[in-house]
Length: 373
Image (cartoon, rainbow, N blue to C red; front, side, top):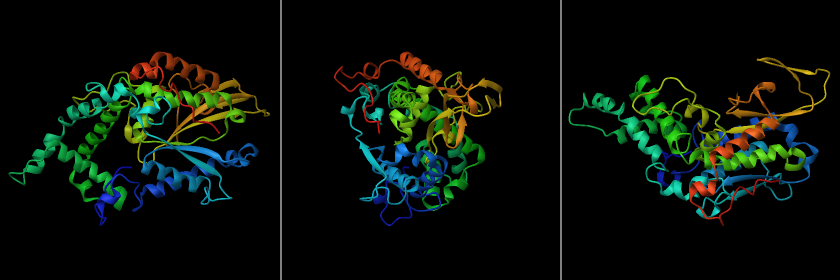
């Protein structure tokens, strides 16, 4: 999480770092997330196949991302997870450097065309955001100026005030900035966040799905091989802007039309606040339906038939199950494993080759190679 602690004596020291104060501190959130997932997945952690070796996990090379991974590990693996003689896991740092090509957790740093395309590349989200902000911020400026003649805030300044509300709440637990905007103005700000992510690295950006397919494909291969060959647990820690491309590749929150920037959309499924809040996470669960006296699986859609001995993929977004739009016939809105693998493969064909789309040479790495136990 990005913040500058205005209450700190040395703000520059805290800028761009994981927050360590307040009830919503990043350190606390990461540790709590690790503890919650340990409770949920303890059988996988303590299984015979996982007990005899260190569990590898990964973080992109940014201090706040690395610290998030370490605090999560303390909650999930235990406080002595990296202590000599007691280590349970090993954290691997993946550089955020251009030469990584497709072998990266941060494809936005390695996709050359994405960085150089001034019209539809990295800055496209900011351009679309600027268009949308002009539909609601001028009226706020006028409202602020009414009791303060001669003072006129710019769109950028007012938008920064709205951002300060969230950042200061994270650091201090409360913020006076939150009280100067109306409920409707906050709804407009929420949609502004939807717009920037949608067009910066999401479905509205031509490079987004290609960048997201790298991690999606590597993960699908692990799920396809199964826990005995691949391992039972994999954790990767990245920026929010690296999670969103994967969602675009998977087409998990499809919109019938691109998000409008001349007005606030009041319906639809793409909501950044629900997908990538602070400490946001996406989980892929491989479910196995073993032998049991019951041959039928009952779901909200009725009985789906014999499922014993079959495998399924279920997607958990911030502790909520989200069904794939075209594949949810398994138990608990899951997708049959073979159908999931087919879907990912088909999306790869539709999206195209990362190196070609990004203008990388044939000698650049073609895919992720480091995800293995």
